[in-house]
Length: 257
Image (cartoon, rainbow, N blue to C red; front, top):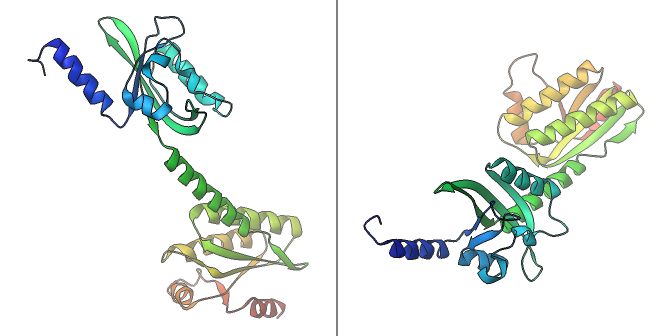
């Protein structure tokens, strides 16, 4: 590249930028309102705005009513301090359609002049996938509750789906609050509707049992499958045992004995 003439280098450089899958823009903070002085063709494809429409304007035209003010503030702070920043924020195309923009801004000095180079990547699909997973997580956590009161001294909860560390933390907190508020002496956890990785599940149940024991409550595990029975049986230490039952009814009858 160094052996090529400057106009040839510039043409090749612009061709590379225009062929990139990432939208690129350059702003000049020495000009009023830090306007755009360059955008590649990918920027136009992403936003719907041509280069002629945006040059000389601050790129806030991509913002809208649902753009997070805290993300905007991070961008503003980075420009003021001549620093770098990476944020994901909701932007809007020329036709008004929204998209989630992974924006990276970096200060670059050329010939003693400061510029900001920005790259914009449409991460709408990834964002929506994460949002869907988060909603499913919240739904499963809600399914951990309510804790049903079987009697004045006993409560029961049925677990559904995959039990992760976060869900066990939620379960432990909710059971602790329930025992404290209701002075429950017995808690039943039915596990017939869950699945888990070998070794992890029993350890978490033991932790819950220890917490409840300190609060004066006894734990009963019901809905034992062959897999669960084998895993619990492999816990050979006498201090690491769980009271297990095939059904909720059998646990209730045992608690009365």
